[in-house]
Length: 388
Image (cartoon, rainbow, N blue to C red; front, side, top):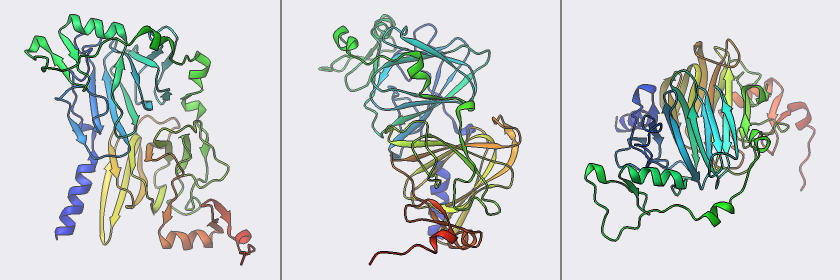
């Protein structure tokens, strides 16, 4: 009974439904700047780069990356700032103008639904919702500790005029609300121009290579050992890192280290990925469709259903199976399918361990994994010899 309760509690705390989102409107130093004062910041996994003690965090356990979101009405801007670790935007609905450079004039890109944008570290970036409706950008940040952010000089000066200051320990001080700067605290000042001039520059063409639009996705038709088996027919599109693919020919759009890998998974109803596990923490967020995730721990089994914008964090080593139940919810790039965003910890390949019945069934269907954990014809592997 104790084990059952513990498993139930673990699954519950790792399930973050859309209804569990808690916004913070004072997460950053620009929260009173006109045009930036109506954005909602969400921290689902880890605190991210929020500077407010009021920020609600759904799951505080270290994953090696952070997951959050920015919710913004039309016309609202996220001010120019610089990250030290990876920042990846996943457009879950809306139209955003993303700009970069210390003054925001180095280049810009208009993002639409389904885009994945990996912004280089150590450059200033900001974005504005230019669509007619409220927009959502999901954000994945590299490392458990991001080191905070640096604001553009004009952002800090504007915030100071509204009584807001930031300490070197990333504490937001609101003097209009009665906060007092702690004795001995060092306040953040604008970055020196000489240091700004030394930052990397990116052309529009270079930044476009870091964007994966729906049309850029390359779908692996048979990415897994289970791909030929009933219920195992999901397809995979690699975006950042090689991730879980067991197709030796598949390559991601971006290979540089992010501290996580990211891919799209899609399926038609009744298909997905059969029971498997691996040694990395895994976070699934539904983009379109309704998904059933079956989790197994020892003799315990639990089912979690995810609809659009629902998230599940799965601990390393946990057995899981994924199935699309219904393709109608949300908007997928291809009609009749569901889409799931998959983020796994680590920069290397994610080597999957399959349930024994899946291994046997795949072998009977003529597919095995070679010693490098890639799909191979069973008929060919039977002819291989091992060195003494």
